[in-house]
Image (tube, rainbow, N blue to C red; front, side, top):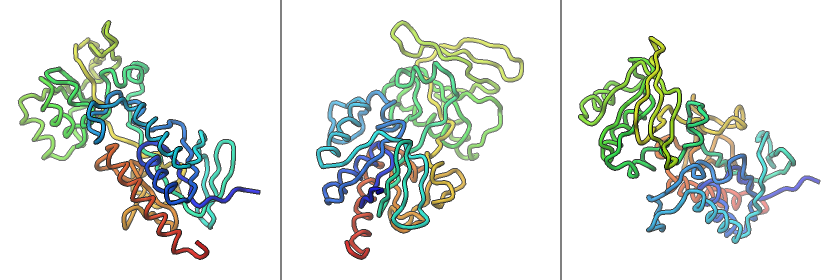
Length: 311
């Protein structure tokens, strides 16, 4: 007999755990599937200084551990499983994982997003040690340092501008000389005296110093193929994010990139399915906003269940 739950939360991270804390307190006995990266993007962030309530700052993984403990203490059934398939065409909804199948009267999707990366081994290894995919999260750690920003869209220009508040020098690295960013954003970056440009270049390798932090990169000229080494203290990836929404393709309405569309707060295109965090938010992408939408989804879900018969 397949289990039927009041609410199933897909994905951990600040939005999933917050939704779990709220639905558990509402006595809905949530089941939460953690997915491949329990704790989400915060587990690859070292220091978090901008989350309220941690005056001394906190390590990303430690913060997610705290969120998880709180969700468990409230009575959340947390399962280390990856959701592989869903059927939202009829209620109760069906959720299949790599080990199991459950049914749910309502679902909160909080699967997050993943920063697009260059795919270098050194990039993953040095993530949080000079390599970052979030200027707003990590910029303050690079006071008076020299950093590179990889990317050519609006977010790259925005991150570069933001980083000049802290860094001594910010260099934008791009493999061509044409930018996807809007003209106004490129002009703003060009007008900033702290921003330099390295065009027709790509990063082939990121090197660490004896302290285990970024000290330089190997650049390749995309026209001549020549390589050179350039010293730097940090490398920021700003080549975009991919929402982790593949498993909901064809089930929920999304925008052209794959962010789940929501209305009235956290309602998706399917009655009884709600979305929270970075899988539906391409604007803010902060731990605190993800937690906020997790709370909203839980309240939306709880009220929606109350309106259904027999609840």
